[in-house]
Amino acid sequence: MTAIEAGLAPGSGRRAVWLRWPARLGLRRLAMPILLLAIWEIAGRAGWLSAVALPQPSTILDAGGALVRDGALQAGLEISLFRLLVGFPLGVVAGIALGIAVGLSARAEDLFDGTLQSLRAIPFLALAPMFSLWFGADEASKIALVCFGAVFPAYLNTVAGIRGVDGRLAEAARAFGVHGFGIVTEVVMPGAMPSILVGLRLSFSWALAALVSSELAGVGTGLGALVAQAREFAQTEIVILCVVIYALVGFTADGLARVAEWRLLSWRRSFPD
Amino acid sequence: MAPIVSRLINERATPVVSVRGATRQFGDRQVLRQIDVDIAPGAFVALLGASGCGKTTLLRLLAGLDQPDAGDIGVPERRGIVFQDARLLPWRKVWRNVMLGLSRDRVRAEHALDEVGLGARIDDWPGTLSGGEAQRVALARALVRQPELLLLDEPFAALDALTRLRMQQLVLDLWQAHGPAVLLVTHDVDEALTLADRVLVMRDGRIVVDLPVTFDRPRARAAAGFEYLRRQLLEELGVSATGDDGVQRRQATAS
Image 1: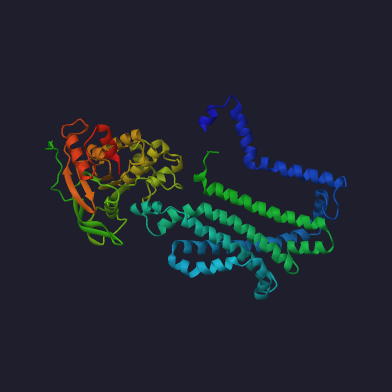
Image 2 (image 1 turned 45 degrees about the vertical axis):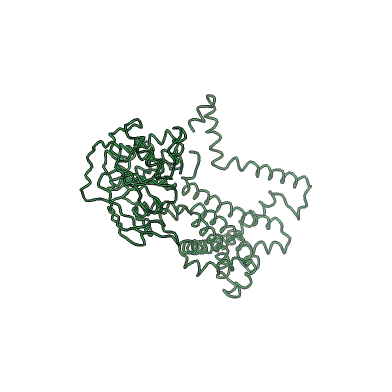
């Protein structure tokens, strides 16, 4: 960093810092979406867009305001988040635990890997009707589907991460008296961590997809139920609003994953930032 | 004849390394055949041999990374090893790497890093080190446990020529300061003769030469008898030592 800054003209170092902070806060990333929203709004007000097919952002916000006032949005969001926050961790923990077992032990691989690989090949959303049959029509089946969706990416990436750890590092650690569990905590898990975090992000995407599909299919509650209802009455603005909320949930999770990467993978950063 | 300049090494003391009848086989291939070798406390021994002669297998047995099929391996409890690649854990700061497998004693790590001239890099990530620096950290990691036996598996092979010379000097200094027995695996005859008190040559899983090297330190290639020993060792390694010097130098380091 010093070498690069030394090569810059006086004053430009300050500019670099000035640019870096908004980048870190994501402000620069936001510029493009804001521009697109503005164009959308203008096009809607000018009457270029059909109010039924694509209402403009302000209409969507108004609809959101109404839903918040009568409490429907909070209630729906609450139940959806509950399903996600129970199902996702369960699935991820199971996936990572199985991944560690299979990654470390040939016996566990024989036991689990074949089965898990064939289960993974099922397009699990097709199982949604079966889940409500097995687990009942209410919470359990939805949580189970979210959980099921989260298992496989976490599992696969954990196994791949462990396989990718350099065996020579484990050997060096053994030569210095690190054995058994110590090898796992000092070498295997940190080495597999980049891949495991990728798995977490993918798992979340799948968990979210499972949530949406289970809520749309079932009856009654959650954000998905709002969507289903709005669709019947052609309230496109509410459908879009819910899609945006799902997306925000996804963005938030991704942001958290970035923070986790920033902290856990600081050794991989090529530049001090 | 090789002139023998006497240097006192206590060959009578109980050896720190005692290998008896060590045999190791991978599939049909006999990699070690009935190896017997003792190493005296504080001795600097170089193990020469072409690639595939079994020298790394022997070193791995001494490091406890592999078991012999037959025979006994006697090694001290406190051992340090430096591999050809530094093998630092990229996700642990430099000082944590030094203390790998020991208590998290930062002061002790700093002391060891100071000895290899890297005290300032104590909190850096290994990924930011140059090849030579990484190898010095690996050396600090081996020495911080006060080893009675220091195993060096071609530790300079991947370094550029200047860095290699500096590292060789550093290893000599640390050896003289701490006095561990050293077993240096190399295929560089000059390196062996510059550093070691004793040179072993392995061929086909056997130790075929066991030669004391008794030139005064610091050593110079110009020393009487150096060239003679060098040719003798090259011949044992199956490299013709005739022809002009430039060719020989290149052959001397070829594996």
